[in-house]
Length: 356
Image (cartoon, rainbow, N blue to C red; front, side, top):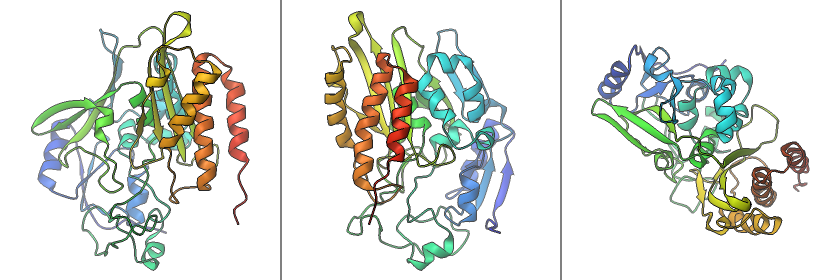
């Protein structure tokens, strides 16, 4: 049985209490919401915080409601199951609903939170292993958080040994979907609050993957009013139909005008880099979503998917699937039968190449 290291624990009863505890705890302290990512990482000694602050009993982080202006505010500790059960999100913010519905399993969605998924640790085949396995390869440069145990961190990235940076992959499903929906997040500390576009929360670095300060808590997510003409979706590639983290995520949102022409569009790729990748959609604007327009855009957008040997599946095949998923997501938004498109996607995902 794997056991976590020794650490101090504080169960915050209010947002002010949590912010003060995080400030006073100093570097290395970590926040616990659902614990579906942090607790296993602690048992594998990937994250070893000396101080853990629980947010489970903080009532300010539990709200999910539409505001008078039509926007939607979601507390960071709202569970993924609550998102999936919300009829308004399913009807008006389908990309988020689909992303939440495909995270892990129903049991873990009952525990996992939106804020936890947005702050999910980056992942890598060489890092997400037990302590003994990582010790056998002399670890890697993605060092554990905190200093509760003595563990030397290696100075090499085994994915790209000549690289000076870590290439661990962003594996959050919710972030690409919410970025495509133009979401903003609120960060809270003892110094006050600040709101930023969700895309600005992420840095392209496998180790320092969040831009928020160590003393800040992600407290809420705000979705803009659901305007007429907007459609959105999220496509996820993984080996199994549940449990697995994404090997590729495609979030797309478009606003169609007269004659089906694209007025606005946002496309975001997940699990292809250390941060969600926002794709330039200028080529889609002012044109209907014809097969020719979709295929041309997918050809160019797939360039952003530059897979490395740090997740599941063969590299070349994953890049080909990126193009297929981009095209499939846009065809769904055009109005094609999503069930038929989904069947084609599942068939593609089962045609795995033979690797010598």
